Image (cartoon, rainbow, N blue to C red; front, side, top):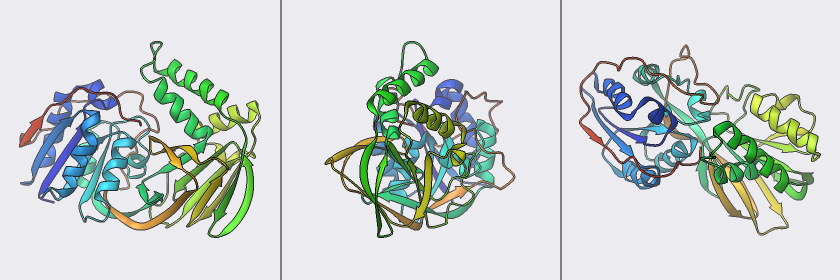
Length: 330
């Protein structure tokens, strides 16, 4: 990889917390060894176009600093191109970055990228659109929808999340649908379904990113207490011990419902999708930079980042600034 393009979501949490100048100075270290590094700060609304252009550019690798939504855009654009994707955990959940062993601190993340090696990983698909981690309907999508509506809550991030959870609980209810798992059909009464790309462990980390499997989690206890417990268990990673959540694996999943459309939350992207929903798996569809095994993973939820002194290295070739716009879903 001789030419590396870095796209930073200008409103990503780490960029805002640490300052764009500190982040770009640290990333200049990627230019060691004679590599050319171009670093661009991009407004959230401009990220889709910037990533699409990067997939057509002459760079060998694209490094994205942002949340799961930004990484999802990059994974979709780079799948099948032969370009290598690097991920900086600058968002809120950072699910894929955790699985790749990427640390949360800026200097540590840059060092991990320098030591990383390319690996081929699976991508899941929803109606043919790739995603890297998970997709949910029912309560999960309503939670994402309410979170978007309460983003920038005047009482702060924590109360904003709590208010979003209350709105999601009020909107959610048990619904009946048909699910086909590798052709095996069953009628299910549930209030939420979560489809994941490969199997997550109880700590919300995937031991492998190339199993070639989907895992479907069906939340069947629709009582208020059951909803609250499931939400807490999902946040803490204890859902596998919850008797109200059933998990099964498959390679193809179809979800049919009496409604023509359903809200889906996929890697931070909220979409009202046409039903039925068709999920699949594409083995080894994306080449990605994976940190050495001994590198500490990023936290499951970003709680703030403190940067050390910027890493030494040559100045980046290009730094552009476009710092306006609203947050991407993450």
